Length: 440
Image 1: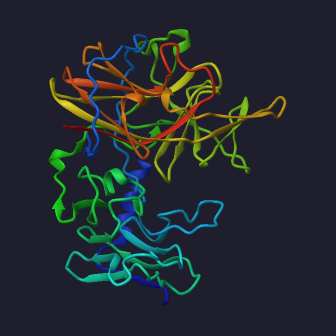
Image 2 (image 1 turned 120 degrees about the vertical axis):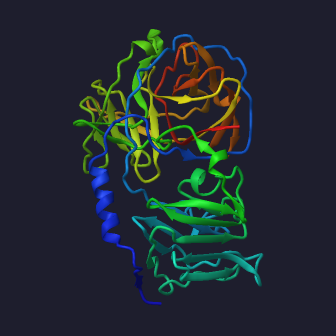
Image 3 (image 1 turned 60 degrees about the vertical axis):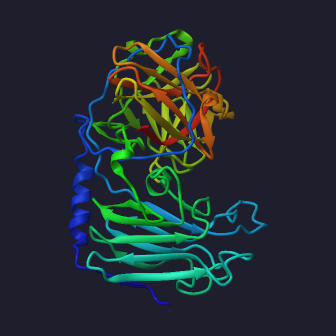
């Protein structure tokens, strides 16, 4: 099959131009933006836990939602293949992926292997259907379990077809093992589990330059029941004057070992560190490198205070400052209803940070300990509501969730690496994304 580019009536140039303008003018204004959507299954309830009394208020950063285009990826995988030491062919590795950005969808071939060796030999295992707003079918392909993706031919991997997707276009993906990991996305919160559970047939519509999940197995998504109360839930970075910041979130550093109160901290900024040819970042005191090649942003002026941002996965890495117990901290206040329960969830994964000392060339790597991840919640008046650790949360894969009862009209969340009343003593890191708070 030869490469093909299929263009519809929508003007891709206009979409790209508007996206570029929006990206170049991202600013920090009031928290007035559409809320994101989420629902997760799995519930634990937090009632009244011991307060972390040293935590007080962080001053709120006013900001405006960034409008940059974000790539969305839907991956259709199958059975794993043994013998690959790099785990690149573990169960669920993609045979074909759909990559969507700026109203364009690319079909990407990832493998010549068939989807399955044991089942679905005479029945559909996976399918993709793309439809234009006027009903014209752009692409419609199904595969049995013992079939493979043809694309442009044997061992010709990568993009083999592209389609323009104007506003209102639909994308339908079926996977016989869709509820599990063999169908995956780069944002399962929005693209797979928005209904609180996954299924087999996922229908998306192009809205505001993004695929939006409309239904799972024919059941429509009710946005009114699954509003994500966190703004900028993927912690996307935006401009803050000559520096950077995370819109809708306060980013700060606090030192629990010094019994520092968060109320004493001032709003700070992020400084993007230049990258060296070998992928390391020079902060002026040490060289740092993230395992997933995240970009390093200094938090404030102290060279050992920083976070990592992976623009591709939208993961943000919280890091302690070497061994002195200082941790980066994210904070946001959300509107709540007294007496109402809210379901909180977050994805937490390891992301090792390697530090090389300039003086002697020695290196040390950060550790990942689940128990160090902490969330402190305050009521509207600043009084303590609850402190949550991962041991209090339900774990499903990399997603941790818990129910929180509101006692006031607002809850302010503080997310950091703590490890107890005296903080952490060591070099630790944890990557987070897909933050969600929804009304039960």
